[in-house]
Image (cartoon, rainbow, N blue to C red; front, side, top):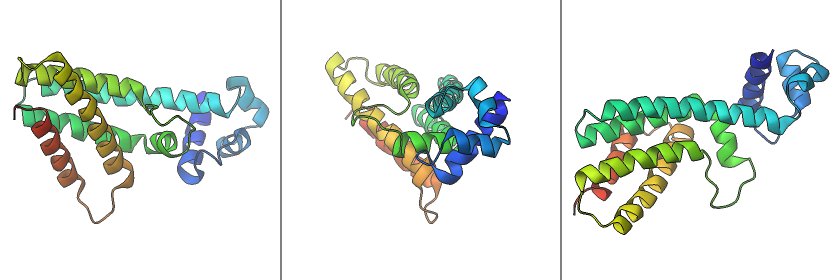
Length: 186
């Protein structure tokens, strides 16, 4: 029943957006009564938070797998594998991620998927330590801070907003080029 409700909520998010999502709409899409829905979820926010956590866990799993595989690759190939995996995972969870980015109320500095950024930051810190072992800590932090913004925003744009005339693989390559250039010696 929980899976049925969550699948219906994802469908409502995809077709109508977060603002139009309600427990009544989700129950209708799931083919259950609102009373049945309330046995499992207190409200719309609890349904959405469950979807967010599931999406975040799945994206983090895919990202962790890509990061582990990247360890044995050249720097550019490793970064590309991680970026491509992140774009694919964001696309897979598009309705939830789109709602987080576009509709769920957050402050201007709020992180859409904080667990994902932490995983990326760890990978980036390792990458920078390998490429620039003598870089001062403050410079490492500055590069990682900016790399997170470029990475997350670029991957979100590719996964959720890519115009049909642009090639996703080419966009991924451009992001990789920017990151490798910004995280490598000058």
